[in-house]
Image (cartoon, rainbow, N blue to C red):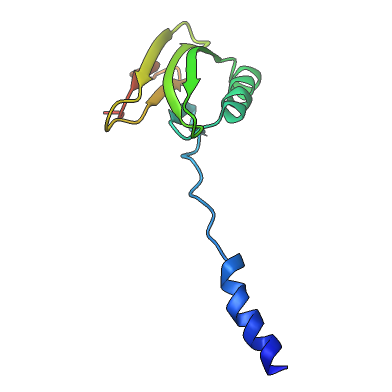
Length: 126
C-alpha cells in the first residue's frame, strides 16, 4: 500500500501541467462600441469564426487580404480590410519582425454621436 502511494505521488506531477495562456480576446462589444484585436497567436479557425460573427451580428465585413503562418502556428503576416457597416472602411497590415509580433485592430463606434466612428491600425493602439 505504501509502495502504491509512493508511486502515485511520484507519477502524479508528470500529469499535472498548466495550459498555455489563451490568446487575447478577439472581440468586445460594450455600449455600442465594437473593438477587435488580432495578435500573432490567433488561429485561422478563430479568425474565420470571428469573420462570420462580425458579419452576422454587427454587419461588419472583415476580409483577410493576406494571412500567413509560420511552422509554429503563429501569424507571420496579416493584412485586413474592414467595412464597418457604417459608411467607414479601412485596411491595416503587419508582419513579424525580429522583436515585433503581428497585431492588428479596429474599432467601430455605432453610436450616433460618436467622436470617431471608425479607426483601424497595426501594432499597439494609441
